[in-house]
Image (cartoon, rainbow, N blue to C red; front, side, top):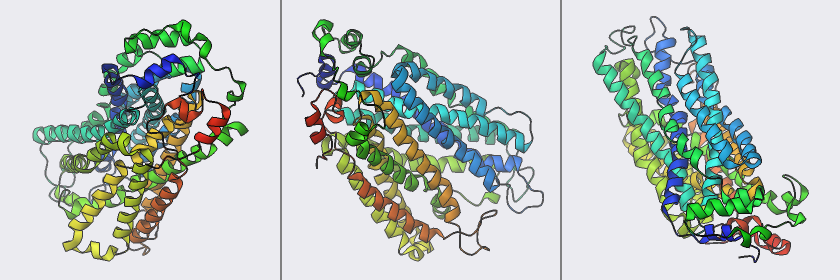
Amino acid sequence: MADNQLQVLNALDVAKTQWYHFTAIVIAGMGFFTDAYDLFCISLVTKLLGRIYYHEEGSHKPGTLPPNVAAATNGVAFCGTLAGQLFFGWLGDKLGRKKVYGMTLMIMVLCSIASGLSFGDKPKTVMATLCFFRFWLGFGIGGDYPLSATIMSEYANKKTRGAFISAVFAMQGFGIMAGGIFAIIISSVFDAKFPAPAYADDALGSTVPQADFVWRIILMFGAIPASMTYYSRSKMPETARYTALVAKNAQQAASDMSRVLQVEIEPEQILEEISTDKSKSFSLFSKQFMKRHGLHLLGTTSTWFLLDIAFYSQNLFQKDIFSAIGWIPPAQTMNAVQEVFKIARAQTLIALCSTVPGYWFTVVFIDVIGRFAIQLMGFFFMTVFMFALAIPYTHWTHKDNRIGFVIMYSLTFFFANFGPNATTFVVPAEIFPARFRSTCHGISAASGKLGAMVGAFGFLYLAQSPDKNKTDAGYPPGIGVRNSLLVLGVINFLGILFTFLVPESKGKSLEEMSGENESNEQNNNDSRTVEMV
């Protein structure tokens, strides 16, 4: 460690795992729990929205959202998230992590509640209201990405920092699972209280008027876990790294961390240790920044972008998989509320069996084998399984082989979560200087959300059959599922290549990685190397 390492930062780096670490994980993690609940709960109720507001008299199938409405309903929160990641990432570096942290939570609480409200009862007004508030809900969620990651990285010790940051991110899995469980409870209660026939027996009667409350309650429930952590966030002290390195107030940093770490740190010993080296006062995207961190930023943005294309394309195949193994029967054999129950059960089982275990494998192993190895391994196995699904695709479409398809599909997303889905969140919070850390994480995350939009919606059109007579209603012909899987395999392979731009940060202090408190020569040599673990 460099000689001019601030004492307060050194104390954080070598601190033993204490209760405040777990408190920080819970406070930041509950934000991510809410993020996942709010982002993914919409997929539980889109079928219900189609039945309620787009019913067609005389149709043999229940009403569904038109393609443009479905895309807007599912995608508008992604657009808001992208904007929030950029804006709050920048604001977190300008005003401080703590000042902005509570702001994002309040936006999430208010917009979760407002998402369940409507101005009018016509389809256009209901969907316009929903989309408006889900955009701003996404805006608040977007702010949680860079701020939670940055706060956790700046609070953690260097030995277990990766596990702590990935534990915050892993709360997403519980959020997705909680959304499914809550929807199961609500749909079960409504189905028992207001029974209705299947659509095939009575098209109009299969959707009871009270079903309109189901989707509203499910969306509004997201406000509760967010509001529960607001007080705790407001009481968190500003991170010592921001206070000392950005705000240049070493005395306050020492005071805050003395209280948190429960050790005495004398501010007089560190007041004169703050670096005033003008060579390190370069601005974001300056020539000096690009020389030191340009390749790192390219690595974090490109890998997150490529990962999210593949990760969010999973909804292309879920309906086939759920139908193949009998989790979701044909829509016309159920009433509206029963369909919510079946979809929620399927999502909960997927989260329980694949999503949650993958996240926690990363938590356990990230500080053992390192970020670089986990990310490389994840992209490698995602590439292998995508090609294994694509090349013999006709084989997997036979009824007798569909269980194999389900297993391959599950393994693909297990290695996404025990792989780049977690590491792309962790690394940008570790490798950039404190004054740019939140901004650079926000830029990396926004790049990922752009990839999510490509994966969720671009491939929805791309995967349509080349035969226009076999496409889903309202969609133009595409390149087919097999060719889409081949493209996704190539995208995952590109993820392997771009991973080599990302440095290994296991066991190193944030200042070692960013070059703060090191000589310029040492910084230029060390911060560009990748430790092969």
